Length: 307
Length: 296
Image (tube, rainbow over all chains, first blue to last red; front, side, top):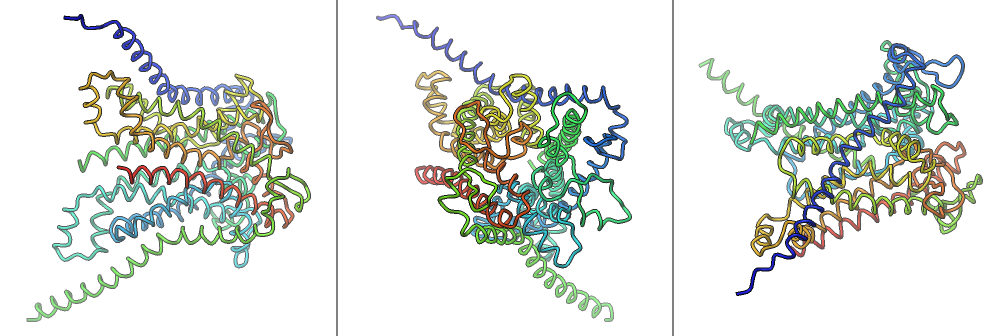
């Protein structure tokens, strides 16, 4: 009888433990990344707020970081972001929702097999390419029948809208596919047409998933940078609710575009103009972070309903 | 009797109206599905036509030049590929490691759920914010150097890491549990099971996800702007710390030139080059996925 050989077991366990901790470290890196994002933004934003008051930043209605007299009111940038968000929402939400209904309720398996990858391409095109398209093709085309500026919110919004269509459609479609078929059959049994089933049964039943996809897509639109930096212009101004058309036809400046302008400029060092980059970045981060959390929360609630 | 006729006509009306509505709605939904695809196709056709005559060997092998007829894309093309290779080296081990931990080791506790939620949220952080992270961390703290190859690669790596982790997790999750149990039954340890059973089975899926994420990385512009990558570089990078431009940066820079030769010529050629590289990357990913699907 030979003794069982345990001599390697110690090494094997030690190696297993070592790999376990190595992999754990990789996973913890994601938490470190989030912490690093918050810290880098906060440290420089705190520097900024030592020079410019928080109240002035959050309530000021003029954004002029470089030319005297300098002024650091973030509201014009937020209103620029709002214009783009509303504009792209008007494109992407109805189109994305109808697309999801078509894919989930009407399209045959074969048609879905090539429509879905084709839609995903819309989200895969680099945003700098969309920005270029907006500037050199969309704006001149719209300019033939609209009084457009060279840089305007309209063509940027349309491009951002097209980019986020697949985001709305794929997440909404997932929610619609999760609606149990028994609900549809019950409705057909009562003599309903496909239109009635889609709009009165499937969409209401998938509403939280649809809502969550809307929020996520809008959060993407808020953070979108290159399209607006190239095509929307660099004119920070407040929303003029009495002239909504004017907002879209002319040059504006969203938060992300202002960040690019400072980033590509020659401003360096410790001045408030440079530090304002981080204050605007922090504002953008907080807005999109809260929206992503809301979307996650709404989506996790709907997942519980049909399980 | 009156009630009966009323009933009938209402019934008939209901049927007719809904049928028309039904057909109209179906067409509307189809149109909505196609409109984005058609619009993109039209734009791509436009840019392809504009690039004709500009996209030639000289364009691909020359440095940028203020004269549109001599302008080239070489430093940006080489820079993009150098950055992308470094990103692959960084994100692949880190992403797969994190995915292995979350799928194979971690218990479904509070920490795991927190990490998972955190990764989902990181995937939604705007790319321009990652640029600020790179500026503060790699340039401010670690002093790697404004606009260097390393700073660019590290910054974009952090940006695509959540995507790599999520797709690697899906690939690992799709390995049937029976195979793990069989391996344990033969006396294999956890690490042996992961190395010899799970990873080989999950590898094509992991590769596909990583390559698709690299496709996303190659088009990223905003983070490079934030870490002060120069818009125009005349030589190809000769080391990890030399300044680097990238295809999207060069396109962004050229798009602001007012001359029509740039707007409808040089930039179009740059855009087509970027899209062709992107298409090649994605095709490789799809080929890997298809070959794997045929085998199983």
